Length: 244
Image (cartoon, rainbow, N blue to C red; front, side):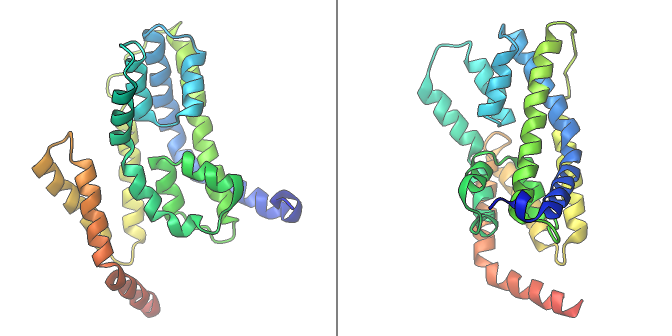
């Protein structure tokens, strides 16, 4: 029996809460989605190309790169390796979400896995889901973000055919949103070890590997440290929770 029949009030509250949680990302997705749609138009594609690509790919940086490759000589192996390198960070997001996904079954699990983005991970991993259906909350957050991106891409492609825009600096919108998410999470943490770990490991990897190749080494370093310190961090959180 579906949730809407069993718990209509819970579904309504969950939908409202998921929509509210997704709102900070909406402006960034619509803005960048429109930039992507305009970029596709500038390459000579009709409006429905970026719209369909946004539905099927749903990975902003990948879509920008694939758009450029569509007007180059066809080289599927290069596309595969490039997309794999860019999206490899999703492996670490997936590992972090194993506990949250293990009790979710059916289409909800497959949609959450296939449509996970940096932003949906940030919301679904950190949100307080007390009083709502956790599975549907995560699905609806992901769905709302998906809709924002598809709508932005379609609108951008249409607007690009009519109005010229200067899109310089548009990519900073999502960086600003992630800074806000980080600050909010930092304020809620009982211990800041993980936050400082992320900053320190990223800076170290950036210094060693450079801005082009630092992301995967930083993720591996964070994963290794957390694996070693998992029990100690768990004990520290349990102790702090007992003292509050």
